[in-house]
Image 1 (cartoon, helix red, strand yellow):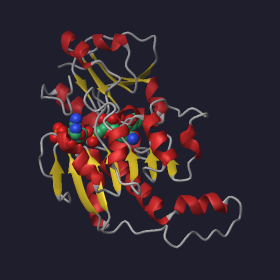
Image 2 (spheres, rainbow, N blue to C red):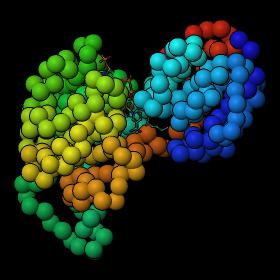
Image 3 (cartoon, rainbow, N blue to C red):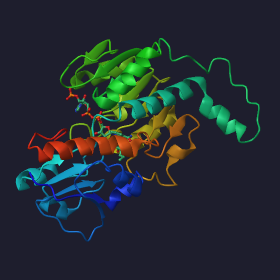
Length: 308
Ligand code: NDP
Ligand code: 7N6
């Protein structure tokens, strides 16, 4: 197929440097243009974007620079015959590292020491509080790119890793794979529960009052997937009541997390601003994926990561 332009929509600037991203396509023979909301498209255009826009349906192919494409209406793309691709496959290391980072910090109290450091306070915690992640059980809910990135790293730290997925397909480093119907059984004995499923109708609110009650009261919840998968009010209640011990959260029901959210105030909650995948080379990882699909598109091959 003849591709006239690769249009990079300016919404990518939310997450990666616009100029740097465009420059990452230096080797590409197709012209790359940075475009805004007033741009129109035709069959000869490919679009790479963070946010959806109705006009994108006129393009030949649309790429979401995120792994989660829940903001895009796949039915609309299918009805229109416009291929839609996403960015799964590139976040195993970045998100895997941040998830393990939360767990190590929560176990060894780095976040608490930093809080006290702000007051030049030589804080010595209660003897019983710190623990090693080694030999602790982690349940990874969702065993795709993110889940596997978390699981292999946790396994390397000597954690006892179990997981949850619909297909039951086994995963390296995961000793037992549960079906989502057995979620309660999967999370009941875990010291850490890490959420790594896409946001879909079946995962929305998957972790709510019952699941939080099922978790151990010394367990920590990690959410690096999407805010609405966890019922945030139920989470605040569980943290208040002490029915779970804490959380590491990169994603929220409303982002940015509103100033008045009670989540900011828990010592045992670590909050990062949806930057679980962000590193100084994130734009290069995305560009490599897009460039590979540009090649495939032009050669008439099937696109990688096609979701509609
Ligand atoms: P993948 O498609 O690679 O993995 C998703 C996994 O979830 C699969 O293993 C799938 O397995 C499983 N799954 C899907 N539905 C269910 C369900 N109902 N119950 C249990 N398991 C389920 O996606 P990624 O790992 O690349 O990304 C996952 C999500 O993480 C994205 O959709 C995005 O929302 C979020 N994300 C967040 C980032 C951040 O910056 N914080 C960065 C990247 C992604 P099976 O089919 O066997 O069920
Ligand atoms: C940064 C988005 C995803 O779904 O939300 C994450 O990939 C990261 C572009």
